[in-house]
Image (tube, rainbow, N blue to C red; front, side, top):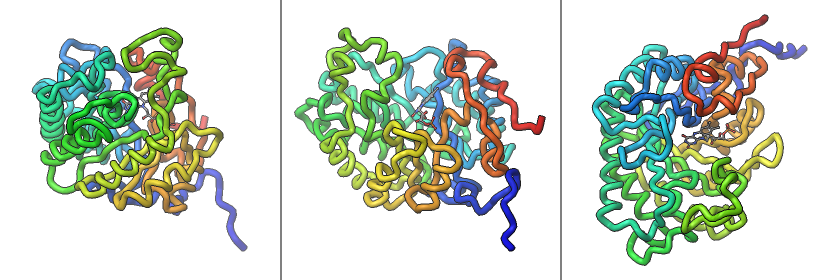
Length: 361
Ligand SMILES: Cc1cc2nc3c(=O)[nH]c(=O)nc-3n(C[C@H](O)[C@H](O)[C@H](O)COP(=O)(O)O)c2cc1C
């Protein structure tokens, strides 16, 4: 007779709990911590602190941690209290974080981020401006390596600089950096990968990004003008329509030629409890390397997409905020806790390093 699976029995056959290689990153499980901006670098130097080390150390059981979007240069700064990776102090401070994560048996890559100035249309950036941005990404990548990271992830998702270049409605340049707008990103990929041996650079894309993804800050501005390019949410310039997806198809085919560790895809806003697997399947055909799927997954849908062979790993953002021991909760079938969005960006320990691991009581 078949034995019933006990609720809290360790189930190593679950697809998310199988080891996997993402390029030269070797993961003991496929439960990835997605990048999460938490605004805890509350100091003038924008260095990560002991709180960051504790926070990432608590989550070292993740197959891979993608640390928060981090400024590649002082010029990139777009939000308060977000750390950087452009100064020696920052490199030294990150070394404490990576050292602890490694001592605890984890792996951690850094997300390299360049929001850019949203009020400055893509067409106004000069070629020397762009060359400087490319050089900043390359230098930040080398700094991340010196800081002990296992690799880096280029943030080309969301609505910031690189995504704006990839967007036909916003990129109206007529030079080589104009539509379809792949050139800037590909040159950044080349600069960033040059700092590493082997495959240790991932890239994050959000081809389906649309008004439904718009950050609350943009939503609150909807209805009145806020930049030359983005007028109102009704006129929101990002949408995952057929033409946009076709542009991304061509980009992904080009990325497939680069020595990348993985492609990290943020899917559409899930319409129900299970994300739309077809949205990810599209990229399985275009990209031969490893894929990380993200947006709205839980244990069962994560197992299902990996089990179906459509993704190699799944990343979890909000679940990792409130469940530092997410991998064991998945393995043992324990319930997960919900995060308090009110503490996402507040600074300080509350809602950051005070989430308990599961306990029977
Ligand atoms: C508080 C918060 C901060 C985030 N910061 C980042 C970030 O720095 N970089 C990034 O690419 N995505 C960021 N995201 C998006 C998440 O990585 C992820 O795509 C999104 O939360 C959907 O995944 P989930 O359903 O597992 O939460 C953030 C999301 C939240 C909720």
